[in-house]
Image (cartoon, rainbow, N blue to C red; front, side):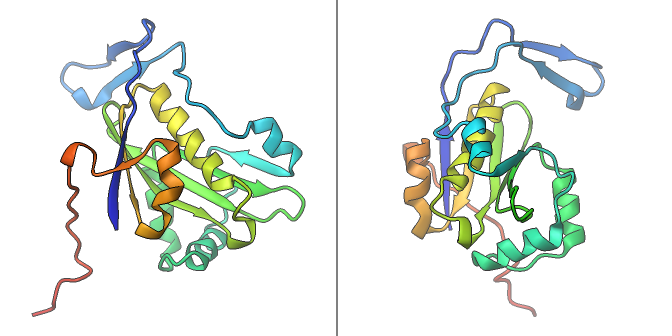
Length: 193
C-alpha cells in the first residue's frame, strides 16, 4: 500500500473560533465554524437522489454484514462485525450510499478518523462492484473531504493500493508529497517465535 496525503490550503473563515471547555482537559477543545469551506462536488446530493440513491452520514441503519460483503467483494479481508461497530464509534466522519429501489445496504462507503483539528485519515473507501463506474466512490470521498475541510482540517491522508491511485489523484491527493514517506507498523507480517 502507498500512503497518499492531500493538503488543502484554504484561508480559514473569520468565524472559526477555538473554544476551550476546560483548561485541564485539552482533549475537549472544539472548533466552531459558521461558514463552511467549499470543497467541490462532482455530483450533487439531488442528482444522487434522482438516480435512486440515498446519501447517509451516520451509521444508523447500516447493516454491518452487508458492508462486510462489500469489503470482501473488493478484496478487503472479512472483518468481525463487532470490531466494525467499535471502529464506527471512533469515526469522525462517515458517508455511505444506499440504493433506494432494492434497499441494497451500503453500495458505497467511506469514513475518516483524526484529531479533529489538524489531521485526518480516510479509511475503507469501497463501492460494491455492481455499482462501480457510477461516480459513487468519488461522491463519498468528496463529501468526506468537504466535511473535513469545512472543519479546518488541512492534512488529510489515506492508504491506497497502487492499482487505484488514479482514482484519488483528480480529487487532489498526491503520493509522497514533498518527499514525505509514510511508514506503517503492522503485526500482519511478524513471525511468531
